[in-house]
Amino acid sequence: MRLLTKNELKNEPNGTVYIPFAPEVFIGEINIITGKDGDNEGWNGELPILPMTIKESEVNYATQWCTTDNAWGELDNNTKYAVFSKNEVLKIIQCLQWALTGCKSYFNEDEWWSEYCYCPLTDREMEEDFQIE
Image (cartoon, rainbow, N blue to C red; front, side):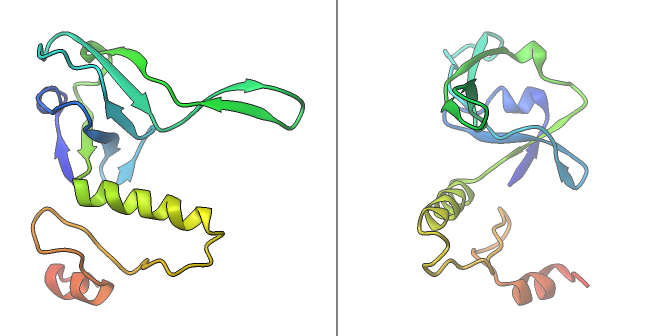
């Protein structure tokens, strides 16, 4: 995962998966850049990984994942944005696929991903490589 400023995020292509990031904490929701038209200053569509809902009854809601309009100007200049690598996005997909099995199949939760080393790493390798106590 890389941390980018708003201006750096503007240079990322369609399909980039990101989330606002305050020091050590994700804030907001995961988004996918979908509406770049080549102009980094122009309109930006994004697909939040948080569905829109319509109430069907007291306990049921229909959901829809759809692209929303957003302008670069709406992003905060003081916020960093965590951009996930393709391997991290694949791990997110694997997490969701594991959920579909009812968490019955095997899922390796003991993996860490980094832009700076060969991945994945185990908990022990992360502790050794990054001197985590």
